[in-house]
Image (cartoon, rainbow, N blue to C red; front, side, top):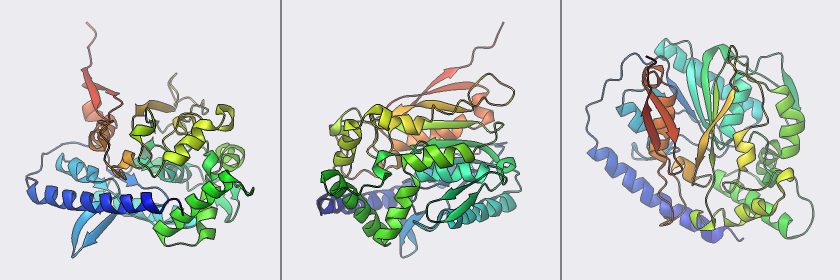
Length: 356
């Protein structure tokens, strides 16, 4: 299988990242910076191949967002990063997320949470916020209803969420090079999650353009009083990609823009992750509910700090990215600062000029 070599690099680099993260935690200063009066906790939601952390002998070595949560905790933010079953059915995943949110609200005594979600986690977040009366039929799992948890969501920030689907998830039946590529992608997902080829295929079908555009988006609508933000990955060229994504990145680049292709992060097209097709206005304003914060030079996994191999061609850093996202949702911070996302994951801070 053509992905065996890149997969070995993922495992090797992942092992290095585990050791680096463990050493960093050993040297972290135990004193926390008090960040007072934060309104709501933040929940990190992973994608469909997600996990919360990997541990050895009760020592956490590696987590899905690779240390971003720990930095934010040191800054005084209330951070939660639960894990749900990889490749579970849509409704099962939804139920697990709801339980996690209920537990967070009970523990903190807060009424709402901010959501920061990567990849399919952003699609799950939309289901959670959608009113119960909205529903659609999934290809394999029957009726899917919104969870009606909009009153408990303060904001949603989507990082590389495929809101308009991805051509990579479209069913391919032809016995040609494209069909072989997609079959390899599905086999890779199955291998990395320990699930069957059929389960991986069903999970991919949920993110197809046809399903997202024709079924999901018309039905699953986040209430317009919830501000939503998007961040996209857009490597400048193939040199900024891990070899895990070089074939899929090129496939999407070769796909016509009107068919969902063009610039992409190796999995999610930029046009899909931006979600510009949603023209709903934020209640009481003349601003779009879904606001694009910017793009960074990173592929789909580098966005969460898991590169398959080191690159000397990009200076992207994922941890500043998530610190800025947290500050962007923090009313105590944005009252005094404006943030502009840079393509390396850092943020440019500008003081708000008060009117005379």
